[in-house]
View 1 (cartoon, each protein chain N blue to C red):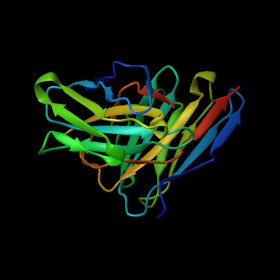
View 2: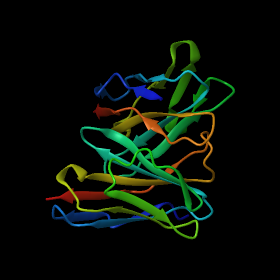
View 3: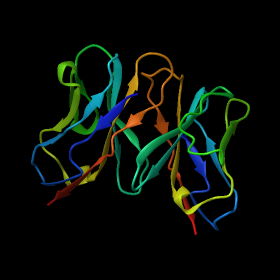
View 4: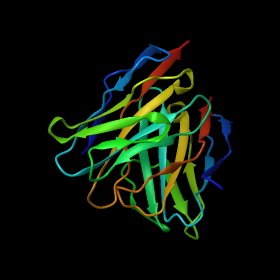
Length: 114
Length: 115
């Protein structure tokens, strides 16, 4: 069975600081990887996903993530955060074979202060 | 455009009562998923539908939980004899197909509180 670890429970950054949120997954086969974001009072929305091709994936709002297969990692990055990036971020994985639901990490809460 | 909708948005019930939660997926999406989001457990998969059939019910926590989908569209999650530990936000998602690479689009959730 797949599992996902997000190492940071709560991250606090000042505006314009750079962001990197860690995500590691456990699964021996080919995977699809996702980052979802949940802004306060809003529903989960997709930031970006990887399923094949270039391991550096660019998403919305200036976010990017890099799939490093040898490290089973899919870390999320943003060079300069804004106050509006305050949200909870979830890394998730599905197996590439068959029909599988998303397996989520526990989430990382990001607080950006002015 | 219309996204995934869920009703009710909030539900307060007494322990032992039954509740029904409804999900309207995006039109044309054949796959529908139910997840539960709670403080201690994070986001957990409950069940998914491909059309009207449920190939994977492995996440349902007990036989008090059941779900159905009719007409390949609306789905209802039913919790019988609710317990306090059922308190959580119940999320529904839909995708065009049930392939692992498909994006799942989430609804706003139903916040359930069992007193």
